[in-house]
Amino acid sequence: MPERAYQLWTADQPDFNWLTRVKSGRGDSGMRPPYVTVLCRACNRFSLDDVFRLGFEPPHRIRVRKGRNLLVTEDYFLCVRDGILDALNAAGVKGFASKPLPETEWHVLSVTDRRPFDASVYEPSGRKCAECGRQPQYRTIQFERQIDRPAERLTFFCTATERGQGGFDTFVTEPLLEVLRGAGAKGAMFQRLLDADEEERQTREPSWKPKGSVVVL
Ligand SMILES: [Zn+2]
Image 1 (cartoon, rainbow, N blue to C red):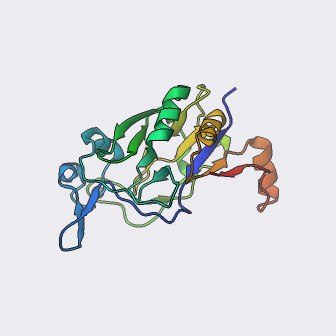
Image 2 (tube, helix red, strand yellow):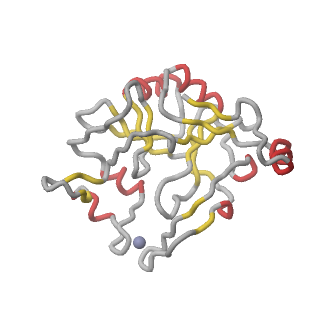
Image 3 (cartoon, rainbow, N blue to C red):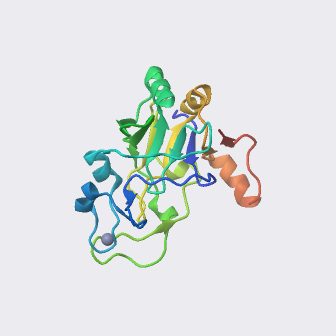
């Protein structure tokens, strides 16, 4: 039996950080030069994997609320501080690769366990890019049946493909959530995927949520 799983969210957080953009001396914001080569020329979107492969050159400055050690940037990169990465490695957590953000205490994680999922949960919105075909997609996975959960006990996993606007929906197994909690992770909300019985009840009572299915760290 796969472990129960939680989707990772950071949308309620007040911090705004970008890894691919930089402010010029005149105050306007532009793409960091190394990444210009991987942008779609029509819509300026990019694949997270292309940027992660190129890596991260200083200077970077991550601004967060005091004590926060886990975040997803505005350009959809999952980042953790040194102490969290150490805890993940010490526990033998699978499903990710990491690269440092030089001259900072932060690391970028790329979730590497890409799982088949029911892409019909997404609702396309707005214009489709004529060049690359990307189109923003809203709504999200809520139920266990909508994504293939890994057999690994302690692992990150994510959707097989990126959303049209960028970013993978990212999940942790329940034992990994406990590792994060034990390491003092702070700055994310975790929402558990509901099983068939819970889904059936929620269909009848849309405002119902199982106790403990939302965890805020
Ligand atoms: Zn495009």
